Length: 234
Image (cartoon, rainbow, N blue to C red; front, top):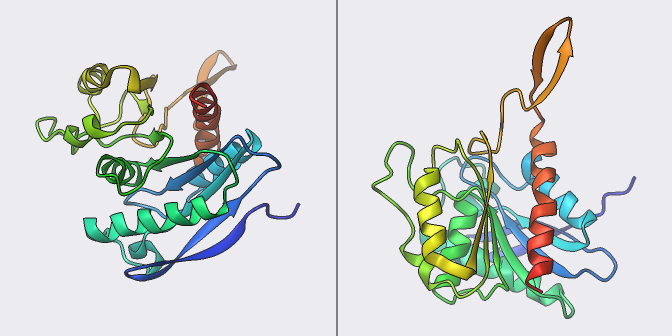
């Protein structure tokens, strides 16, 4: 089967970065998806999410930040990450017709999208967080929520309840403070990448065994939640 995605180059202050764009017939929305600090846009989790969003009827654009594009492990400065988000979001706007453009991201990518939205650097119709990094692991006192209250757009938090980057109680409190703008969908036992040990079970010779889902499958499973939320806020 032919690859439905078109490879693009987007210019940033650090040079060009790669992006992949796919568009179904008559999409009801475009969703721009950023990766996290540990992997680029071609990680199976993001590929699964983007492909499933396409099947749900959305145009998709996923992209690399410059540090991944150049093969480095350490994330770029905040200024560079913000500039990249602005450039890619502008590219997505240039390819849409009349449909709204949403911003999404895994961990770091989602947090930077929300920071850009809070400061009016991008104007998404809404945001979908694929695991929001509310605080560093083991340091709930270092909460990263101040800018969220300045985001004037719907926000969907898809979050594992065992994610070390977000205490369920703290995140629930933040979502409640955000009011009607925010919705939290918890995934019981899910980690930072929504991994759940033994989530698929079956009897084998009297024993209960689990099957760990592949990252691509996990990412794809989040797309229906995103699509439903976006349709509800059309």
